[in-house]
Amino acid sequence: MALWLVRAGKYGEHEPRFFQDNRVYLTWEEFTGTDLSVAKDYEGIKSLMQQQYPGEPARRIGNWSGQVWAFVLATQLGDWVVVPRKSNGSIAVGEVKSGYTFDPGNAPMYRHYRTVQWLNTDVPRSSFDQDLLYSLGAIMTVCEIKRNDAEKRIRAMSKNGWHSVPVAPVSVGKVAKDVNQPDDEAEVDLEQLARDAIARVIIQKFKGHGMARLVEAVLKAQGFTTYLSPEGPDKGIDILAAGGAFGFDSPRICVQVKSGDTPADRPEFTQLIGAMQSVSANQGLFVSWSGFKPTVLKEVPTQFFKVRVWNQEDLIEKLLENYEKLDQDIQAELPLKRIWTISLPES
Image: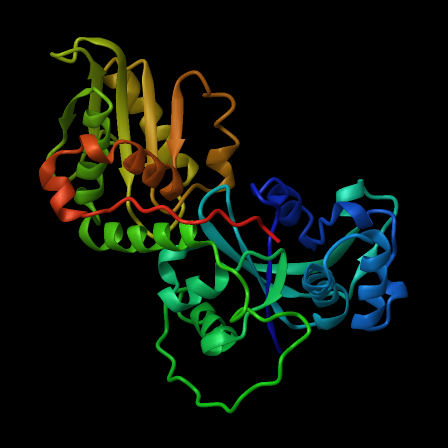
């Protein structure tokens, strides 16, 4: 069995179809009208790629051909797929249940697919060891993840409540190069890896009430006057924030913060709405480190003018935007340094 990385678009724009349809799609725009099953091996895929991109360098053709070959021919029934989610910063894991299918009746970007049984669509990135996150950071649309017993360890995670399971490293000899350019040679998303490292420190140092303290620090850096509820039962009110030196100006915001390792559900969202009314807040902010279940996300449009939701990615984004303005004690607990690096295109 193998483990495959499949991406749902550069910005996660195809995620809804992946999970609604119980499929992974090869969203390769230039091949929307071609049934790729006409290719019987890697060389056949490469020939189609050369016809489609006659002016591209050989190395790039080889890279792209390897990705399409992996999806169409190399993936087998029973293999597992991982899909890093852009929408909520988690990782979805599923089992392949069908061979490659081409359906010309589907919308152009959804004609190439494999059926998948999703085992968990919201595994927190913090549940994965750093070396696995490094492999999952490969900047490719499709590739096999083989390094460090990745498949064995993720299967073990599924039996351990999706928490990391130590697995002794296996000593192996030199492996012949795969035409699919395996994950140990793929470029990686350094920005995402840096954010994973930041996330790991945050969850270690700011778990529980500490997460509310971190959110309060961000709001203060944005210019709000705040009140932080003491540790303990808070009835859905972790932070109150408002504009003005004394906090008497608008907007008046009621904030609920969840740092647990499961996505927030609708009852918690409803609790925030009730808390907003009890303190006469005209707006709310719901921060959930592990993201939100679909029951919450369905409510977002109807509450658009009243409530905002932040997942892990959103909180880290706001933290980085306002880092220089954070309280010095927070900066000491979470020391960060800005660096510059080359921006690589997604393959």
